[in-house]
Image 1 (cartoon, chains in turn orange, cyan):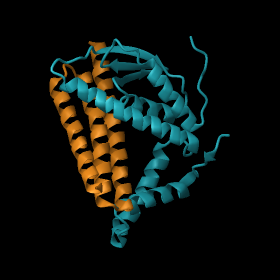
Image 2: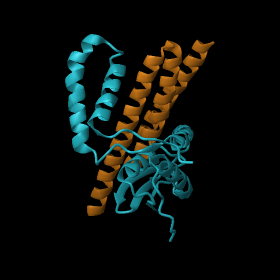
Image 3: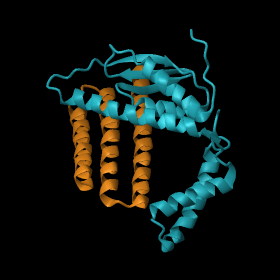
Length: 94
Length: 167
């Protein structure tokens, strides 16, 4: 039962990664692409990690996975902001 | 009723924090401390040098409030953007808007700026004084109420006041 739930969560996570990548290809400009990547990947990785934690059933590994999620979140959100800021400032100075 | 956990300040607290993280990352392997001790020492040194003052005092109740809002918004932000990318006709109307930050604490501001990017449809593109420049996936929607809500949750988390005068 838990494994079925874990598989569903992992598949849902992969679905959001795919949606983010499609957004990266389909969205028209740099900022919109950043939206697709950061938000979809955040949710995708979160679901993936909950699924993996359920599957592995080890509280220490679950904590470690949570830590990975937080690190990816912090890195992703910060780099998205920095890329957007760089692009925006350059646009304004042209 | 502000229940607080006071994050202990100083080198000892940082050492304990980073040692715990290392222990978690290496799953408690004893031989990993050969690398871990210098790594923890460098991390303590770097964080003492880079951070502004003591570790923030976080409110426990504020933390629960912030986390529940954060998780809910992450979910709806991800679903919203996934729906927009997968629909046959792209339903986006990108544009910019400006939001005046009410929160003053610099660390709280960093958290807010980063979290805005996870709310549905918003991304903080730049910060100019008290004004955050937002990129909106759908410029027809006013993003201010949801950001205000997030800002309030972060203010409670950090136990800092929000500037209240609206103009």
